[in-house]
Image 1 (cartoon, rainbow, N blue to C red):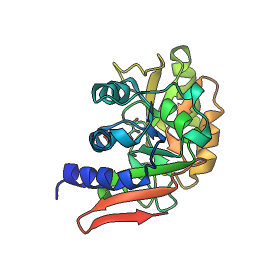
Image 2 (image 1 turned 60 degrees about the horizontal axis):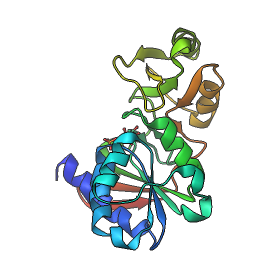
Image 3 (image 1 turned 120 degrees about the horizontal axis):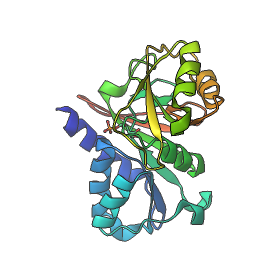
Image 4 (image 1 turned 90 degrees about the horizontal axis):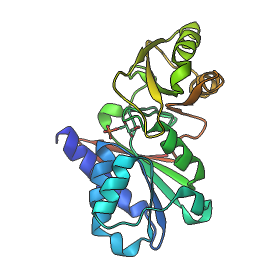
Amino acid sequence: MDQNQLKQLVAQQAIKFVPDDCIVGVGTGSTVNFFIDELAKIKGRIKGAVSSSEASTKRLKEIGIPVYDLNTVGPDELPVYIDGADEVNHHLHMIKGGGAALTREKIIAAVAQQFICIADESKYVPVLGAFPLPVEVIPMARSHVAREIVKLGGHPEWRMGVTTDNGNIILDVHGLQIAEPVKLEQQINQIVGVVTNGLFAQRRADVLLLGTAAGVKELS
Ligand code: 5RP
């Protein structure tokens, strides 16, 4: 099976975590796009979705799924958030933000009762950090944040030409071996000018559906 087939497989499995009549949290990326295709098949049994990006919102609307403003949706109505990851470890800590949607993803993940991560096996790593860590930054703070990240041992690179849905820029931080994801997530969040960083460790996934050649493995 190729990588896309593994992504499709986990997207199909994720549907079993979507209860009837709920509002489902929808992430961003190519794996989630397969999940949106699966949601289209069961759209009659859900109320709608909250979306983590303009790109996912567009796809959801195109298939006729109502998209709610998160401010009108409480945790009781949001049983599950389904999203991909750029890297995930055995604690279900993740690096996310390859698609620049990390801030809205983290907000929905904070509200949802359960976070289901869907990923192909190439994303499963012993130590986070080979994938450059995305950090969303207020544009005028770019150089300040970059200098502070260098003090933490990282090598930040401005993702040129990318503006997030929130009007900010992304720094991709190379060269990190992230031994303590919760600590580093907090440290980077404390830098003035950082909106969000792509470490999802304080709020990790509850379940990982990992697509492998031998089928879908469910880890929690
Ligand atoms: C977007 C994300 C995605 O979940 C992550 O980049 C994985 O994407 P894909 O499913 O395309 O590999 O965090 O901001």
